[in-house]
Image (cartoon, rainbow, N blue to C red; front, side, top):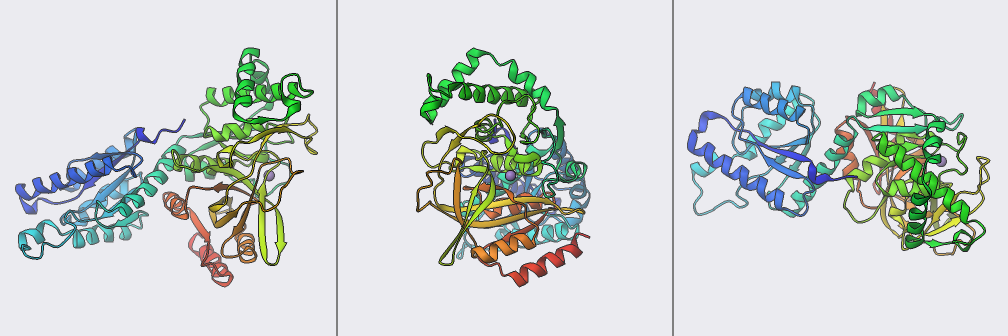
Length: 496
Ligand code: MN
């Protein structure tokens, strides 16, 4: 459901008429070569489209307008091969509504020591041309990413890749629809928020639907469709004996499949990108959706439990940014601690809904009682998660703004068996250490719900947040509590 190759980034080169036709022709050729090379790079996830060199305020304005209204353009990569006096850019940049990446590169990698003359210097002057452009973006207080290096350098492609994936997720949010089955878990604070403000800030809409409307679709699911999905469960997962055909709880597996199909049809029909549900509002559903939410997440839908629409949207953004990459992204909750002074760890899990995209090996499909919600035992996928670097990211409504909170963590594989734990789980050690990270998280007002990402780095979320001027607080190996507390105080001033 996510195809980044349909999306385009426009490669725009700025110049001016001062240099004459010959030089401008060379500038255009060089730009075409760079755009083509980026297009052919395996690291670049979207189409890169060369646009004719802009030389006047009108041309600049028109390309920005065209980018704004183009259906597939997710952003602009700009480069000043020569000098492009930046007052020419004011009107265009003020009107630009798509993200900007400033590629500070140069066509020639090396100085041609023996041959360099003033003609070469006049053509290859991005070292100062890009400074003029950078000044104007800063003068206009416009957020953008600056990438520095030769255009054939793989690390430059990697920086562009990160920004492009972030731009794709931003683009995906514009006009995106998120569906809430029921409302929030009653009395919970952090999962609340201003949905009007969110739509203004982020471009997506969040709307509620009666569980009865979903139940109607679930009840219309055909037996033949249920047969097919149950066979798929059997092929993909290790089914608990009682869930197998002829087993005592096989009907529960069929009920779970029916719920998954009904939700899927409902979400497809409404063109939704994510959803929430809550165990407090399940009227007419026989189980809390467990395997359904897990597998819908694995298909690319954002999800948040207990009505947590903010986490549903950020899970979706992570799914888009990580599209096609190895590893996974899941809804997550900090659940329980291991407070051994030698090895302090967090156990992350949820009642049911962890995405199997992060599973290590084949998941087992099990059924166990659930103490809350007052419904039949729900079917769920149970699995462990591999060790390695990962992130927890949370989005909170601070009243006058939203805050994105990122914690870098190091996942570790469980060193003991957890034979009685009936849910998927992850163990991690947050950076810089568990005590500092958890205190920092709590000082920053971080939610208990997050998106857990195996394949995205802080850079993705920083680029993404910058496209919305969204406050970003990072807890990583360098975090110390005094600086973090000051940062939070200073941010109160900045965002006032
Ligand atoms: Mn929860």
